[in-house]
Image (cartoon, rainbow, N blue to C red):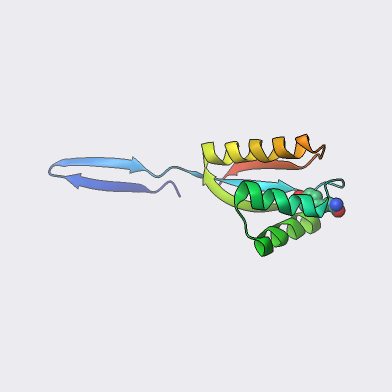
Amino acid sequence: MAETITIARGQTEIRVERPKLHKVILLNDDYTPRSFVVRILKAEFRLGESRASQVMKTAHQRGACVVAVFTKDVAEAKCTSAIDAARKEGFPLMFTTEPEE
Ligand code: TYC
């Protein structure tokens, strides 16, 4: 994904790196209610009801699920915001980020 775009301007070649995307990953735990996980996915990541439900179930069954990909800053900000929202309600829900290959 670290593809380089070349823009030719007369004799000058400008090389622009595409920003690397980062995955936001939802982690399972034994305490957060399923309905709360779905609510967070909808509110913080703008997922629709059925996609939020699908992501929650996959994390519940497999231990983790990719929620979406963003630029590094956006992925980290959304992750922090989602974790904060869960802590405010007293749930241990966790999200992590990792660079896409
Ligand atoms: N495992 C939780 C339960 O049984 C629900 C849950 C699903 C929690 C996905 C976190 O990422 C998660 N209440």
